[in-house]
Length: 208
Ligand code: NI
Image 1: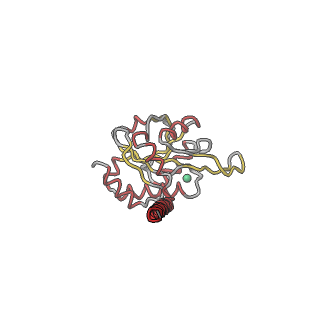
Image 2: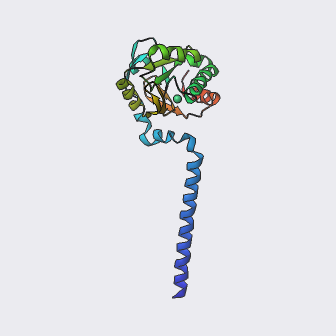
Image 3: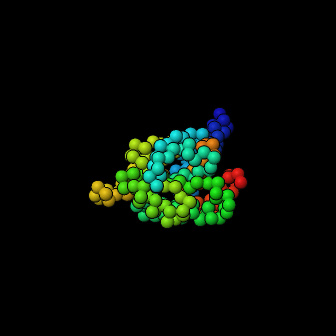
């Protein structure tokens, strides 16, 4: 029956169109979202799994664990002092966002965790982070301690562009994690977040 055949053809064509449109939309969404692609990690592992116990050394040389920060919000992000652009931008963004939230900033500890413990001694880290704001806590440790903290926050990092034993770059995730006074994950900000966007987010999530 030719009529039935035509109907089937129309159905197949319509199906192909729907699938094609779906592929195009997915592609467009993925493309638009590329700079924030790392944030997909947060969604896929689930918010409850971000954060957890860590044992590190702060920029004054004092041993610190996540328990030391209970009762305060923590704005945690990972990087390294030799970072050419992403980390200095991140530190400047956090410093400015904390200025913008006013007295609320006293409830938030901004913590910069080194992914380069080989070069980032507490002394080096201290000089670096406090130049952006005296509010910053720099955290480093043994390579094992840093690896454990990074694992807790689902942060990936890798030594790249190695030119000499002490001349290399670090690839690393660059999200900012806001942790609550109970140590639980509250929200995150992508690496391209501006200071005013971050200030808005902090005002929304941090209880005064
Ligand atoms: Ni960096």
